[in-house]
Image 1 (cartoon, rainbow, N blue to C red):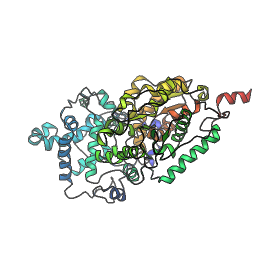
Image 2 (cartoon, rainbow, N blue to C red):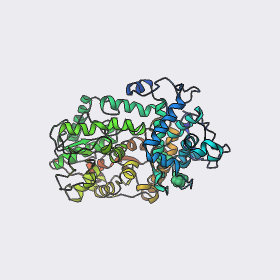
Image 3 (cartoon, rainbow, N blue to C red):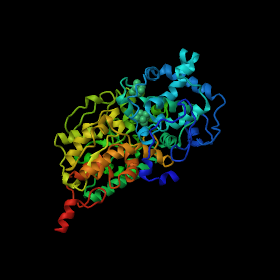
Length: 539
Ligand code: SF4
Ligand code: SF4
């Protein structure tokens, strides 16, 4: 792909001048590198979604149903009635522009339709034309547009260039959440069979086997057993990792990448070590072999379908509460939808650490807490023996993954953990972290290869902040707590900031954790020689 060969300095030639053409002109060019391929018909069929067929976004004819326009408008009408937020977001934007330069895709591309205000305007203009008197009577004056095939294509183009990260909403004085507008936009597109494969294939896999990768229960079991064996080799300690253990106190849910990809896998090792060390009575489940939920990028109905397994399995196994691992969208779903969509989970108890006695009151509705909350509490109470010098080969910064930070406010716990397990930690500039964190540029199901140019553009503001702390403090590791981040940040940093690695927070906890009965450790969980050992060897 020619675009992939672009050097960073070429990609940085961003033209921020407004284009000559009227913003209402919907024509877009589906050129390689900036869009995602369509979902395969077999995946739509499997999920019972409408209009399965062979097509691609660059085709002239998208093979839409003959009544596609009625379907979309009826879908809009239904959602305007059902979601008050959607109607509000359609009505109250005053076009103040406070959000305009807050989107990483706008900053990285200079395309004004990637400004959150204009992205939402793509659908708002259609809303005005069909659902407001002013738009019906004076479309030109009201900024209203007819719904045409070109407008539909424009929606597809721009709603799949939004990672639903919600950074823009932090700056909007009215609290307009453009991610929610994108979600409705994608939902409407799904009604006429326009979706992307990088989202729908994981959804179909998840629906079939419980995880995005399509790993079957015996594969899940093999992966966990492999991790246990490897951990025994590294530490000399054989941990237990129960699967489907009825009557365990806690159900532990991880994203599938944790047992299948790196660097995610090293965090899985870290969890296994901690849970063994404190003797938690927990269980995995091969039926809940995925915490992530790509339904979030498809439709509200799909979120609910994929999430249902968590409470169902917690009930079947008769656990007391649920612990969730490092993941992004899992936490958005959990925090904002799970208890009302599939709850109330009255059969569960408010999560309480059996080790410290801490009762996590904020989770009394969901009955589920984040592993960072759990670990931070253990460290705070001095329940883990830690040797931060085992991470001395890392000079660490932290990327607040959009969903755990903005969607659930998990800001201090990961930093507290990192400062406890690493001797060298430096935050990136304030306006690029915590609630204002910059997205990785590949979230919401956009982390595929065919749109790499757009991912590199969208990820540029994040990478630029990493570059700042690399230059100032010599940072060589970006820690994060999201499975998508762990997959997409390595190529992003390799492009913009070579020399910076990516790790999960619990990989670093695992490095530092001194286990009872462990053998002398000479490497970290990746097999990299420890700095102190290296120094001793050369002495
Ligand atoms: S949600 Fe994120 S990606 Fe979408 S418009 Fe807002 S800032 Fe951009
Ligand atoms: S900040 Fe809010 S009100 Fe202002 S343009 Fe953006 S979405 Fe509209």
